Image (cartoon, rainbow, N blue to C red):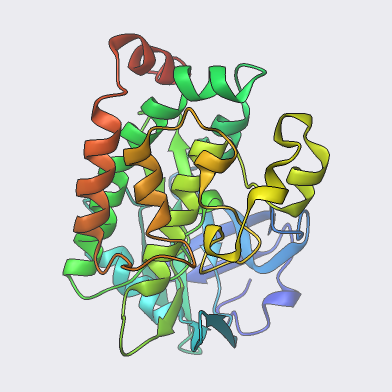
Length: 311
């Protein structure tokens, strides 16, 4: 029985954690997915069962780290903050587009977060399924996925309006809830310091998500070299076409897929290295994306997009 969770490496399957008067049976350790870290154990994140209710939970234990990333010419300090995640969980508890849970201190004052398990898969899974060709995917699935993303982005705007950040906006941190079809944000224990643009990394992460949906994945050097449909595209690119956040990601997607509407591509170009103006708040992104996508939506695309939910 662990009441002090400081040494999370010592907490293994079959052990129990007691916090806040509740006991949770540990059933396993969560693992990383994507970004070259597939199957790496996240020793501070445990699968568990609430022994009082029998419900599946995810227990996030206190793990601190910090690092710097460079965005354009600016170095940004990033760090993991369990207390910040606990604060955000309280802020968004009734918001449908966020994971649910609460923070509570163990006997050593570590901030433990108890998270309700979401049945579903991350957004990348829904992007990779479907027709073989990108053009068919773009016509049949991408508009509806972008449309469903909009209220999720409104949730992010709600968070920003309250003075908080997600801190780690990326495609695998959007879970498509299989019970409701809603896109829901998970894992917001990262934070960052950028005095001139306090929400910048969240906004840039949103740009990557939009690009991932439109392109059906990341268009990077590997994909440009190996995908026959993209042959010759690399020769037409300039540094201005690439993401300001990740110089390996293509944002000017019309150079790869000319049938992408200009209005939608203009949204993406706000996240490119060659942008004259970058988005400063989520409201601007939502307005432009909504206008660009509204003309692409049909009843058939929406019906198809929700076919995998239990509505």
